[in-house]
Image (tube, rainbow, N blue to C red; front, side, top):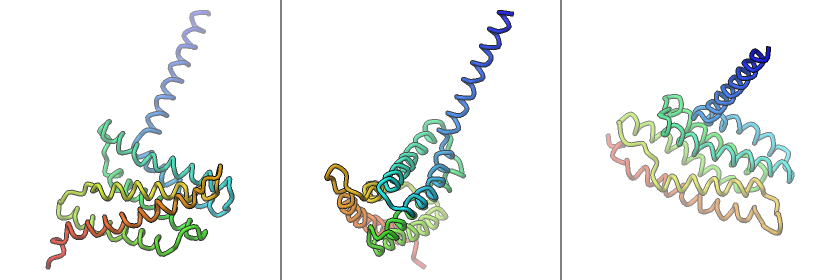
Length: 204
């Protein structure tokens, strides 16, 4: 009986470890991380529909976690060789939906100028169209350093803008606006750079 109990305990322990390993693999899979960014969007929308210190703080927390997965999914995809067609298509879409929705909600609250949001989202749509043309021509689609800086400053602006309210005498909204203006400049600059770089594709 003692031997049977010990075997059962070992089996339960191994099953638990297997389940934990499976859960860990699922949560760290690049496609799961991409889908997490998509799932974070309605959560952010609902939180910002009821602006308050608590909701704003949690919306910034959810956005930050989603932004971190943007780095992690690429890291795991390269490290484990898990690059897939689903990831190639959904990853940039998830990024744009997350960023665009966040900017739109901030504008709807009057926390940032709507015209800045129009320029940022308009640039993303235009560059996405251009990237589709580039892909059809078989050209290099890797993001430029300007594009990476643009994304970095957009993220850096959204987080304090979502926090919005001052904490410990720190004006997070003012900090967010500074980053937003830098992000706007880089957004226009990187977008223009894309079209100038591939202007040859527009020749008839």
